[in-house]
Amino acid sequence: MHELAICQALISQVESIAKDNAACSVASITLGLGPLSGVEEHLLRHAYPVASAGTIAEGAELNIQSAPIRVRCSECGKESDARPNRLLCGFCESWRTRLISGDELMLVQLELDKPETPASGKLTQFN
Image (cartoon, rainbow, N blue to C red; front, side):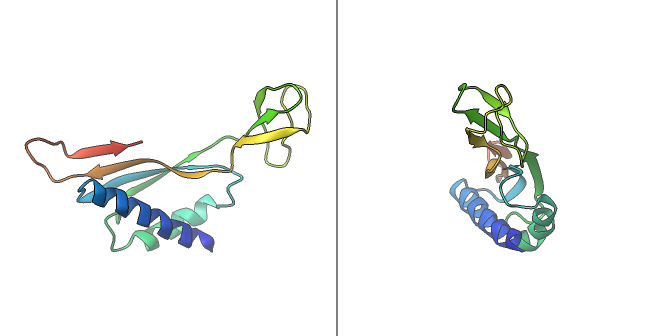
């Protein structure tokens, strides 16, 4: 299950960002996940609590946003939605397309809790 290794790498990235921003905990993590990323969402959700246990992200809400599959056509130059097993142009139906989204796995947003000080708020968002 490579989803555990993916979650461990995610937690490492989150811990680095939290440290750089003097956060005391992580409130939520939002990921963008495309259907062609090779990552199974349900396995990622199961691996996350194991990977985050004992870290600054333990207990943080994991939000996953589905990314659409989009292609750009080399024939007509237009962009359109596509299906995983049919990456054809939605306008001219050409097979000469280039994938422009749908294979990503990325950290979209991170909400950090910071110690309360007179000059700062409690929650910081990073997009």
